[in-house]
Length: 220
Image 1 (cartoon, one colour):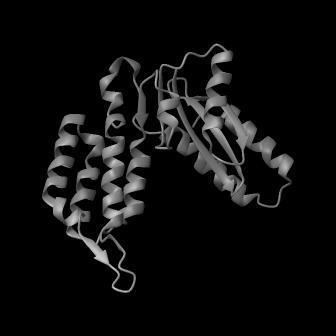
Image 2 (cartoon, helix red, strand yellow):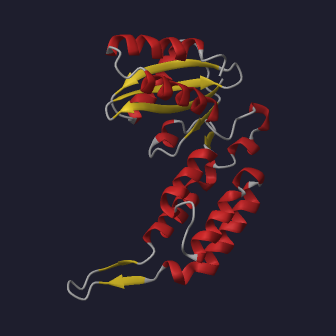
């Protein structure tokens, strides 16, 4: 199976890790968690393999350490999460021209290939290389920091995840999704349900969530 995996939280310490088979359109593993840790992802894999599942590829967000955990299978970085990361650093309407151009590069992420995207990213970096190294000094302390830290972080995120952004194109025989959107639909439904029934007891809430994850909200 191709394993699409992500976590959803209903509070700071109340959440679920969920693994979905996108081809069969069903959740094959879920477990209540307090935090999103590598141990939870490791447990998910161990449990699924003990049940006879063979994971042939993984689609996930950019959680540090997750890719080495699945180093023996192709890993696809979710395009939706990558775009969210860029928006978090640059906002939806960047003020700087460099930020506007980088967002434009990312805008075409789902409609390009690895070589074209890598080339566009490299051209952007060459154009703004000196701008990215500008520093701001504090005259009182003598310390300095990069002036455009958030822009640098946005670029670093893309450069770091570049080897995993187009895995789905490199393995067409596996029919790998390029997002975790199959799970996001279920997560949105669950969050809405929890908000509407905020006053229900914890045990009933857990049973309701388990039922939806097992049966799906109308075949989401």
